[in-house]
Image 1 (tube, rainbow, N blue to C red):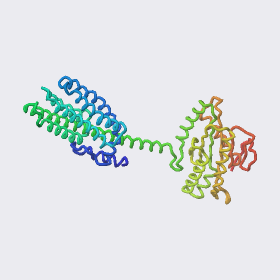
Image 2 (cartoon, rainbow, N blue to C red; image 1 turned 90 degrees about the horizontal axis):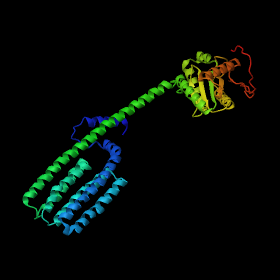
Image 3 (cartoon, helix red, strand yellow; image 1 turned 90 degrees about the vertical axis):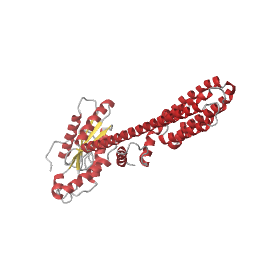
Image 4 (cartoon, rainbow, N blue to C red; image 1 turned 30 degrees about the vertical axis):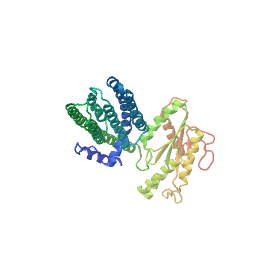
Length: 418
């Protein structure tokens, strides 16, 4: 069930009558999946606490029925070993919700059966006082564990039936005491079942409210993530925008300062893009920019930051690579875009769309700011434009720097460019 369908189911259940304890199947499955682990732990702890309390009644058995104490010990220990321990082990290993409740219900019924066997085996005076403690078994099953309400009703009915069968023909107990015992067990059953119902109702309602808030917060978080992504993404090319680029530049700069690793910046500008737009129109111009953005992404690593920072200007931020590697990356980008063979007849009949790239590398050895790296990359781009376009220029001169023709690109005096 997806979040929207789940939210509708939750709202529908919250608007229902409070007497309903079972959710529709998908929501019930979600409820059990979310609460099963916690409920299993709670039942295991309750079993560990109830077991020594159950054995405390051996003191009473020894006082009233010392003549058959060996038999009573066998009954009580046998009940724990044959029913209690296997049930506890299965609970610990993990079972389905149905079997989880069934196992605990069997423990409760087994405690009642064992207590009734002890009562019937005893003929000692005042042994029938034990009957007035049988209600504690229902208290344990319905409020201490507690069982799910449906299981609690069935378990309570079985325990009462076992007790009534035991009292029939039990001669040491006067009829008046039997009536009082029955009244007590019925009252205990009623009170504990009402409490069991309220506990489960409140648990389920609290779960629905919590689930609704969790779904809503998830939707809010998704909406915020979408808005955040929109605010940092260029809608035309679906890469980062200037805001994302500036944030990435600041973050990568700080990381480079700590690691003393080089940080490289490529500024890419489309040559004669106005002529292309004027000839083909803005829709074709937008498609051209999208193809260039895709080429930039194809030549970048996952850790690199690609962004559109102006109309036809892009940036590529490269972490932890040398000047030579940064220049090679720029050349791969330039050649890849050139290889697209996007015709630009606004410049000349045989002209194609090309880019000029300015490269700047910071070694972090000098005190500077991120904007200094950006300014040097911009200056390098300007030199690439002055040098004739469709070329890469490195802000720090290097003997291996090459032009578009494959010759070494050496610094030159600024000159006007077409």
